Amino acid sequence: MRAALLYSAAGSLLLSALTAAPDADGPTAAAELRGTAVAAARAKAAGIDFGPCPDAQDLPGSMQCGTVAVPLDYAEPDGRQIELAVARARATLKDPHNSKRKVRRQGALVYNPGGPGASGLYFPLTGLLPEWKRIAAAYDLVGYAPRGVGRSAPLSCQDPKRFSKGPTQAPTHPSESYKKERIAQAKAYARGCAERADSALRHYHSLNNARDLDVLRAALGEERLTFMGSSYGTYFGALYASLFPAHVRRMVFDSPVDPDPAEIWYRNNLDQSAAFEGRWRDFRRWIARHHDVYGLGRTAREVRRSYERARARLAVEPAGGKVGPGQLQGAFLQAGYYDDQWPHRAHALSAYLKGDPGPLVEQAEQRPEAAAEAENTRAVYVAVECNDAPWPTDWEVWDRDNTRLARLAPFETWDNVWMNLPCAYWEGPRQRPLDVGTGPGELPPTLILAAERDAATPYDGALELHRRLAGSVLVTERDAGAHGLAGGPNVCVNGHMEAYLLEGRLPGRRTDCAAHPEPKPKPQRKSQPKSRSAAPAQPRADRPRG
Image 1 (cartoon, rainbow, N blue to C red):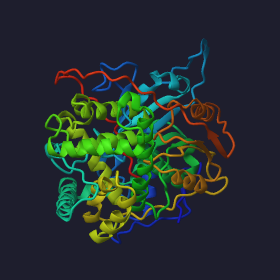
Image 2: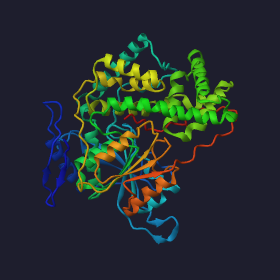
Image 3: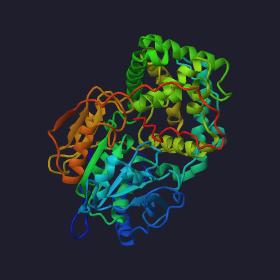
């Protein structure tokens, strides 16, 4: 059942439908929605006191930072408050193509990069990039760290020193003894979340992320929200659209999660594992087309053999003492998200097999200095997805479903299981997923961007969201699979996004863009030793699972 909350001019509430919390002793959805209205009114009155950013003194641009208070529990808006870290870069009001022309300010554009567990605090810096300058002229660019992330009441489920350990194994067809080991780790992680967060843990979920977004809207002084969400950000953005349709101005859903309640989140992850096998094949075919550069094989099958040869060698002797099969798999999984990483990963694999482990160690090593951030990201990811919906609690269900799937899609299946398995042993109540959807005229037109071969959020999710949001427009990048299209290399996609955000103009209900150009291979160079004080090359924060 869909919930919609409308505010009258006098500020009274009209609750047209409710989604009950699953636990009988928990707060009702009606109380939580009333609490959201109270928190939003307070935030509007208080605003955000923006000032210098504590960790951005050396960064370019004019980004400012502040905080906004939100209730930990929206059913008790006068109870414990937590603070969300917020960053903003003011609209430049300058046309990047005509310095004499002034641009009209259109308010704030709020962005979330996904996860769950990713921070958008540095989003305002994208205004310095050529692809974003027109949008940065008209909008204040606003990013924030959702509850639990970074400085926003951070969650942790284990000691980060224990979290980031290498080398590790990553069997595509794990033995029974290995499964028992990972089950024990999942139980311990779930237990650690419960012990460290205690009673607060139950309040970290997607519905509260949507409510927090409305409080942030009010704190920014926006009567209606302009929002862009990528990956997981599209899911709680869709929740927001369903809960607060009258508060929406414009929304961009970039690489959408399938919001069908039956998919959240167990089936989403099965679908994702299946989709990654296709994207892994795309990557291998690209490498094979450039055999003259990398020497890894002239067919996708031969490239896979090269990869398996590296896995076997790393299992016996980890590269640099820290990169084993698990780190190799993690690095190549990132290439499944972003094809701009293909040349770097192919070079690293090729160099390693030719006797130079340097590039692979540089790209795949788990850096101790990044352990705390990585553990925080994982903790929020697990908490949100485990809290959001029911999960199978019988290991036999997980084992049966994923053993079958791994026969056809071995690349990511079991890695995905271990990522999510704490949800089988979660110590807390679960939400019942909201049945996302809006009828004709309830929501302003929205824009959905999706790549046809996206593995992280398979394309069926975009079709499902498009079906559920009346008046939405779907722009599809055909024959491409990079995750996250906004501001990327596709001029056609960016043109539709700019037309929508700057002019409110949308193409036809279903519109296609041709694929962006494939990445070009880079000539190999022998790696040079790096100073240990050098800044590590970090993978992108978002590891969207649904």
